[in-house]
Length: 236
Image (cartoon, rainbow, N blue to C red; front, side, top):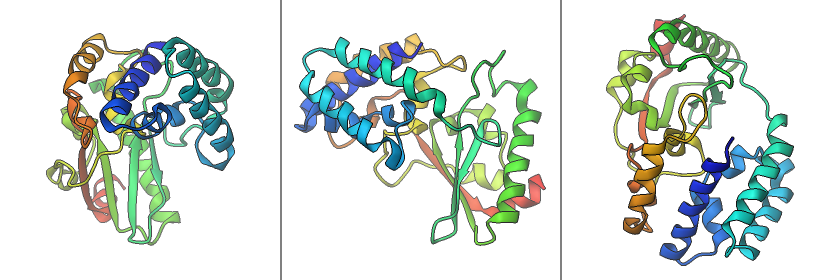
């Protein structure tokens, strides 16, 4: 199912390796979300991930072989991935500055888009449950922050407090491509590659800038933040 997604990301990484003059494996690590997609994050997945990167470097001339390796690793490891307790939403505990990072990942096997109007009550319920836990378990949380291509969509923005939406802006820092904040736009709610987005990215590869490879994506990742009290007041 994800073969096209893996192929696109590896083509992207292959081009970036040439533009940035780095190895194919290093480009995969910097410019794809394959480590997350293959569920090889953390110490537990480090050995398998490093072995995969070595395999990619050794087989850089055979994209098919590297894609097949991705498919195999996905079949073996993805089923072990933990699911969020809050449906499509999850969060990272506050850092030393009290910043809580929030994330959105569509659930598998859905009958319609998770951002369709009829699903908005369900999504708000997930947010409500998540922030109830944060208030109870994370007393040092001060600020909510998100970074995602989804902040370009009204269907997503309508789920959040007005203060959070008003603060949406272009990031003032380099955008990481090893998560879903940018790569998420490539997949539809069925987790299938969007042909038009795929075509746009491939057509823009020759114009990739080594310092800002994310610029060739149709939608740019945006960031938003506000005080966590705004979420408590509106949701709880």
